[in-house]
Picture 1: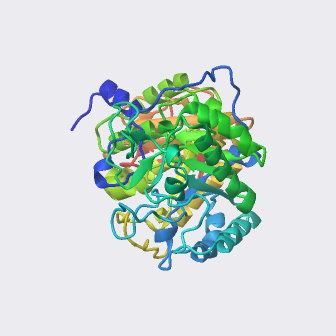
Picture 2 (picture 1 turned 60 degrees about the vertical axis):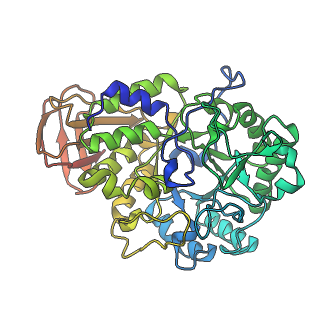
Picture 3 (picture 1 turned 45 degrees about the vertical axis):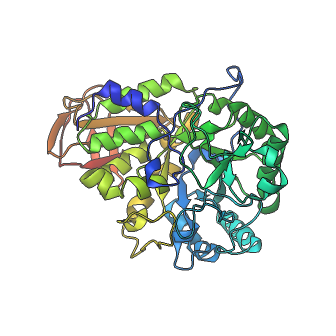
Length: 471
């Protein structure tokens, strides 16, 4: 179905995905508004290595047949070679058994914030994994679930007043916009009006930095948590080390001022999918970029993705979601402003929806897409134009006479420059490049062939063809 652009984008901005607990949770929950004035705040601290970092999501349960930390540790050299910097681990805590979904339950129904799921190994195993990752120059961030716990989390008995009560009973999380309970029946909502609960949450998040030397957190449904908590939390974590913080949210711009270094690019994901499916023209990418640059502070950047655990499980594989456009869209998400995400299995052309509540091992094969990702991730490291936030160069559109089908831009930082040419259509295209400021001799990072670009050059492109050029 064709989607009117303004309606689509406005809808996309009201959407930001929660960690899905069931297939019925595929609608993105609405945002909450900021409860604290952070308008005068500078950018939160950021680790030096975040300037050029890429990110890789690991589902420990499905990563190997054993589904444990040691199997992940064995693959760390391969991931380092591929160009990965940040390892984002889905929740590694014990899973609540009360009201669980499926056979094994959701990793987002946490039973103890300070313990390890015994299926994955021991605390010593996780510490060894982190140490090995650090030895390779990799960073580790943990998935944190701050809005709710499982029904048999240790806090339920120890601190029942730390939970949201309605008529004296604990409830599932409440949608902050509709004020109605969600259908996340395997979890119970925490109460951020309780200062003792906040202290307990901060102490639990400090625990993993102290004990395991992790490098930060990806925070689940971060918009369900009041923004003043994030402002309270951040300096308490940074006292231990400067952490990297990722918000699974998009509709709270002040999170960039209170706590987070990066948020989810949900709207861009929706737009890229709509372009791939012919529901939007390529030039609408710029319309969204323009809006984002007005919504967010100047230092913002987002995690850009084609797959993650939610998208893969509930909405479809890469092929289902993007069809023959998949590689072109990955190139786009790896070269626009933002940090590219690789979901585990993508380097082996993952072609199935990985089960969420059951054991379902990723079929690894021969890593047939590894060189493709290595080319893109290595380019991001080496070419400062592609670095994150203000460390990189702004994407500047190169106009063509086929802007509805062909998307061309260049990014420059100091003397480093990258030009990206994409045919975002299922038909061959011939396009004249306009504008100026990008002329020069380049090398295609995939074909390794030289090319000279100048204004009014004519490029012929096959359906969904892409070219990434660097000086």
